[in-house]
Image (cartoon, rainbow, N blue to C red; front, side, top):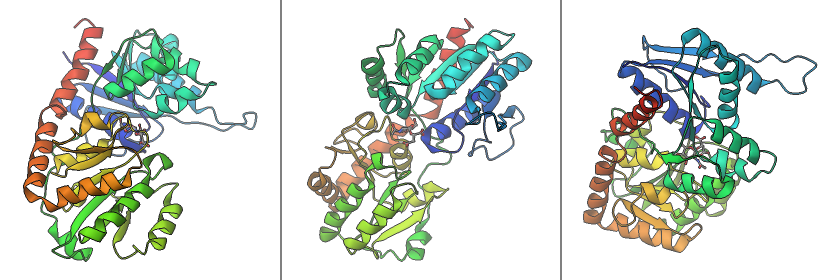
Length: 375
Ligand code: GMT
């Protein structure tokens, strides 16, 4: 049974937009009709699909409004698309504002639609602690028909923080395995002047304080004392100037490659030996999965959903937040032992091909939609 599915996400930033877009593409490939409703074209929507439509939310700024009313414009556009296209399901990513807008739109629309809300993290871990928004987030969750979270940890945290009268099931994130796999990009090693005997460590993020990129640099400084290596920092964000200061003060300018924002990350993972994600908050950590799919084991912190993605001692290591010594020690252990590295790398690829496979996850979402619609 083909469904008409609306999808709303933040189209240009972060893992939530990536997951929502990839889900839309895979559902379209399975024959469903997909309607993206967002402020700009989802950024990974990079080819023509006959059954994917895009409805842009336009916000006018009138002098009477101090702030342009984006949320109301979004709700209005959602209602228009629900009615005109007769959507079966509207799947929104993020409780605030998207779930709340969807609920308003459902009331406005002249066609019954089911609302599925996926929680990605910041909506709960940051906004859920804001007393001015907590009740609104709870409302958005309770009034959605189904709520999912991207890890057990996030489901649990949401229950503890907001105590919503709603079940929250976990549906893990996934990546497109057709894009993320090991590829021969060894020319990049040469172009970045990485010596044959050097190991490569990678960190990918939006450089927000919560990602603790400075810990990545401190850990690298320790690792480099024991193993010739380079650190590739991929991304950009608010911590960038602090990060460049730290690199300079540690005399690491020649060994840390600041690559800025990049596409084609699989080529960078394919020349990497270790992926570091040392965040203090992280509901899932999509970059860990991207790296694992390309055979790169990871070291992550014991927060949020990270220990659900990295299985400690099997696909990588889990360390305490800020424990630079332990992180460096585990990194050196992994980088010096080729057999252990191969073992972790193979186990990571296997995890991507099973627990986190795009088919598995897409089927879970399809199952949720069909159950809701009794089909
Ligand atoms: O991590 C961010 O700053 C971006 C944020 C987003 O909106 O994309 O990421 C959140 O959602 C991702 C997709 O589900 C998760 O992989 C990230 O772990 C999560 N970030 C946090 O929880 C901090």
